[in-house]
Image (cartoon, rainbow, N blue to C red; front, side, top):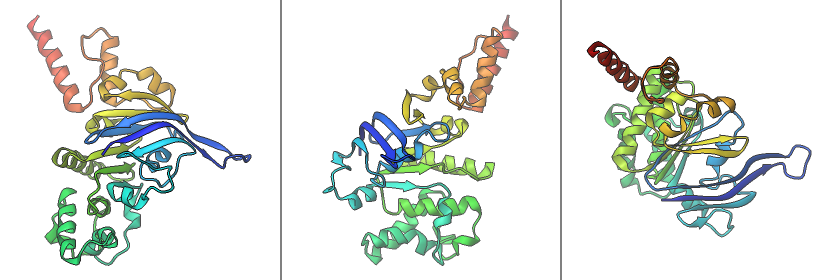
Length: 287
């Protein structure tokens, strides 16, 4: 399901002393099946942008087309759009409220009118997609679970509606390292296994480098870079100037290059950096 953004602007409190231009003339195309990372400093417009993808915010100017449907058109069925573009807000576990995991995950599809006979299949499928064993968890209270498990249950509640696009706004915020790593691994497996479009908003360059195949960079409500992570992270000065940076392993590669070592400018993971350094060491031993 493609999403096409054409000259999108968003102005909060227009024509008042509190007017803020949150987005300014953004144009981009998101193809079906992509894994996109959206990065930018605080206040750059990341959350505002993704809330346009399912019509939670309507454009002040420009167009947002989801599978060809114009979300600025008041005749567009936004309910249908939201069934296909699932949005997971920051700290989604705060939205859990039912007595059991089953009831929480089933809430969305039940309100969609999914028959009772199909709900169990939907719930089990969604929990499995986020790496939770359905049989051991469906009858438990979600509030008995760990923070990482609660977050995955909340994401499962969106997946149970079987969206074609999954948008996650800072999904690893507040998680411990183990919970963060588990969630990122599950998102990677979800994308590769289902072909679903995944759009991940994050402040963490390390998280984005691990999973995204394309980066969209925002600053001051404008689109300032768009491309593969390896290409975007070569623009270290630009990223630093807007208040971001590059993954620590990329900083290491850049430092080695400054000292004259023949290494790539960008590494996207610790494993990649280690392999590069070992190769460098091996070449040194052969001389």
